[in-house]
Image 1 (tube, rainbow, N blue to C red):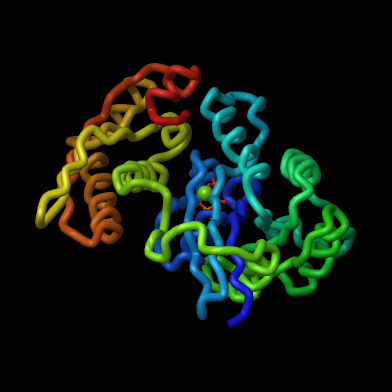
Image 2 (image 1 turned 180 degrees about the horizontal axis):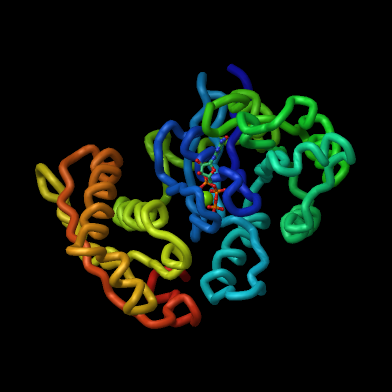
Length: 313
Ligand SMILES: Nc1nc2c(ncn2[C@@H]2O[C@H](COP(=O)(O)OP(=O)(O)OP(=O)(O)O)[C@@H](O)[C@H]2O)c(=O)[nH]1
Ligand SMILES: [Mg+2]
């Protein structure tokens, strides 16, 4: 038998780079919600990955995307999210930094002038350097990369920025590069026993995951500021022998937002409910009854009492 390694790995990066998509892919099960909008993830979420052939256990910690919490229009919720991500650095054995390649519109310029790491990464790099943790870089979304010749300048820039143990091009969407990523990450973990039971997949209760599935549909189906003004609380989660009965409240900040979330003749809220019910059904593998309410809680995201009431503490 080889060495058994086990430890915590924080998945960090800017918003929308694909951290939660990658977590779900590595686990082979969806526990973290994802969307094309930045700032989808708000809390840390643990996913337990048991390696094949009993080689080890990776406890992956998904985190909110690192953004400047002090920017225009930023709220107490933004501060909470960034704190949640930054505090993960201190609590793990290794860090997985997820970044994206240059977008198509600047690819030509990069090919000519070389690649510079965007300034938005300042907070991330500062936290990483301060942590001194062993780290692996995943260059995600290579399926979108304009040209293979861009890989080298991007990887070179990142290896100059931090002594990464490995830099791995991946696609979390197309499932490329992930085996190597797991090998590189597990090499950074200490020898030791399993940290969580083998059958455990996440630290989050089904009740919480159900609320996230509702929030995900709001992120996917509504626009502009609405996703950022929404929180979901679970009022009732009743597991019965053959099904589960869930009652949830979607909190918004303004009357006008409530109108949109409910939709004409209740069309939007029904759509959110149908889709979320399917997702929760897959997760719990049973029949789900889901009842949704929409409530206005003016400015809940702006103050610490408001966010605490929505479960962000
Ligand atoms: N083309 C492509 N899209 C991807 C890939 N990985 C993730 N995405 C998409 O990128 C978007 C953001 O993905 P998320 O997993 O929610 O990103 P995140 O880093 O968790 O975002 P935050 O939680 O907001 O910090 C979604 O639309 C994903 O489908 C990839 O490898 N290729
Ligand atoms: Mg996420």
